[in-house]
Structures are given as C-alpha cells and as structure tokens.
Figure (spheres, rainbow, N blue to C red):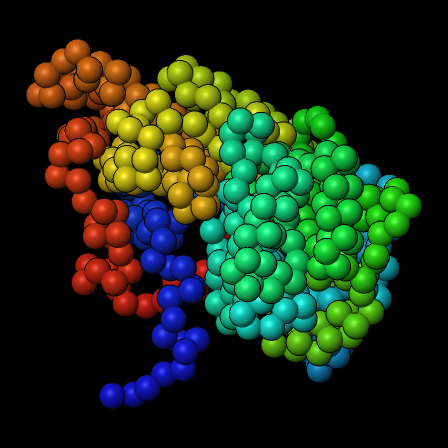
Length: 484
C-alpha cells in the first residue's frame, strides 16, 4: 500500500460537500435548450456571462493586444521568455488603475503592492501562508463561501472559526458576535491570527456600511490581528448603497495599523474572466508583499494573459463602458429573477451586488432543521432539476436559505428555471390538499420533469448517499475546478 501525505489524504478540500455535489449533478445531466431539455440547470455557479459581447468586440478591434495574431506577433518573443515574479509592469499598473476605477476613484492603488496569484483561490491561500501557521485560525462571518474551507485551510493547516450571523438583522456582522467567537476560541486554546470578510458578500449579495467596516478595523487593531478583505465582487454592484472598500476606511480613520490590512481581488467576477486565473493580493504590509512575491512563483498569471489584460484594462473608454453596462445588465437580470420568484411567493434577502440571490425557502421545510433542508435540496436538485446551493454548505446557522446564481446563463434559460421553480412551489402548495397521485397534473406539459414529490420524510436519504464523490457512480477524480 502506497502511503500518501496528510495533505493528500485529508478531507479539507471540501469536494464531498453539497455545494460541489450540485455541480456533479449538473455535470452528469446538463440542461440544453434543444439537446437535453430535461437536464439540470446550473444555478450553483457564480459566473458573470452578461458582458462577453463587450469583451469580444474589444478584442476584435484590438488584435495587437494578443501575441497570437498577425498584428501582435512581434511581441511574441518578449512575452514568451522568462518573466520575474513581480509581473509585467504594465499589467500591474493596469490592475492598480482598474481597482481604483472600480472603487469610484476615491482611493489609489500602488502597483508596487500588487502581488499576483492563480485566481482568488490562490490569492486567499497565499495570504494565509504569509499570515498564519498550521493550527492558527481566522474568524470568518457566516454564511460564507463554501470553498473558503479549501482555500484557507486545505494545504496551509489554518482553521476557520465561524462568526455566526442570522436573519434577525439581515445577517449583519456585529461586534458582539465577533467578541463571542474570539473569546470562545481563546477558551479552546485556538490562536486567532485574523478576521476574513467578503465585501460584497458571497452568498448574501450585500455590502458592508462604513460604520461596520470601521468597527471591524477597530476590532483587529484592539486584538492586534490581521484583517483580510475579499473584494472580488466590488464591481458587481447594481444599486444603492455604494460599495465601500476597506482602503477608503483606512483613509478616514484616525488610527489604523496598515500592517494588519490586506485585500484579495481578482478579475473573475468583475470582468467575468475566471478562466484567466487572475488573482491579486494587495497588502499594506511591506513584509507580506515581499514574502507574497516569493510565494507567487507557485501560481503566477501567464505572461500572455498579463499582456492582453494590460492593454484591455488600460483602455479607459472600454473600462468605463464595461462597468456601466455590467451594472445595468446585472440590475435587469436581478430584477427579472426576483420578480419571477415573487410570483411563486418566494422572497430573497434584499441585495444590491453579486451574481446571486440568497433565497428564503424556510416555509417549504417540514421542520426547521438541517435534515429538512437537505431533504428539500434533494428534491430540488433531483426532481426540479435546478442546482441551487443549500445554506448549510455556506455554514449558515439557519436552515432553509439557498444561494441561487442568475448571471451565468441566457434569458431563455432563466425563464425555464423560473418555470420549474414556480411549478414546484405551486405543486407543494396544492399537495397539501390533493392526493399525491394527482399532483403532477398541475405541471406545464412542456417541462416534462416527472416530479414524484415524495414527502420529505418518506424514504429520506442523505444527498451524499445520492451523489457523493465517493459513490461508485461518480468518477473518482478530484474536483479541482476553482470556479465559485
């Protein structure tokens, strides 16, 4: 028997979670408008596909930006040869300028503090390697992005201590909740090295206000711990209130130790380019910048990608139009989707950013338990055939919430998804007064989903038993996609 390392054999990658199980269900039976209308619709992937026409149009008009065209091939050798870990100067300058533009020009970023990494996944891991040792911990307000468990801790050995937030105040982070989590960790002899927040939030789609951000800075200053701000959704804002970067707060506060403040950024969400694997660590700590550059050698951004994006992001007219159109299109899609859910009596947490909504299905649970949430998710993924992500995979303390992504598909697929969700909710309502054998008569014929709508407590089986990565029906290959 071959003995592998502890990293290779531990389960902290998280691929056996419901979050990734939903992806597997989609991969095994993907929806297609003509070839597979009964397939699973992917609404578990936070991807921004609403503005590719703008990017493609720019590329056609700027062939010299690519070294793989006749117009740009003269730069092929210069880009193909070895590049240092700092990255192309023009790329770092373009990214720094773009970060400032996204934040309304209220703050400026120094290209000398730009550290590259392979997507936000790599950036989050890199900053953990710089700030914490195995066994140390970071406070993370919940609900939080499921793959933080992988990104922050799989290879670094860093722990996550959830700071539980609830719907009573819209899942806002409170000083009391932070103090309680910190004190509990101290009692358990867990060394807290920092606090990580996502602003705008994934999965909530909300932004933090100035006072909350100032209280977080005060908290880390008092405890002398780090604050890592994941701002990868900064340009997905589509309505008020405005997004406020931690960089703005630093300028406004009388005392803030800059050595404790770090930003994680990428172009995956704001520009819709997750495949380019552009992750950024922007630290106000000189030692972190120096160490991060050395570590970035394990996950650099391709120089070809840097070259193309340096030209694209330096085009101020293009950037301005892209950001404006992206905001308008996200607003329109969010409006269409939430109104469609409202027709079924489904509400969502009020949000103004992100590529998703935080959908409230608590009234559809037989009882307010995690088991009831898993049973409902089982029905949605296997019978309604829509992949939504259950709140428990985001470490939400309240059962019945689901993240639903709306920007990774065309308008027609959105309508099909809404039809399925509406049909499901309608049948659940009618099912309270009808025999089970009569339920399927309410379904629109064109859906043809053959819902059985078993009561959630009949033949209940854990979703992991249905489509676990360890199941013999699923290929035993690691899920290594870094998309969120």
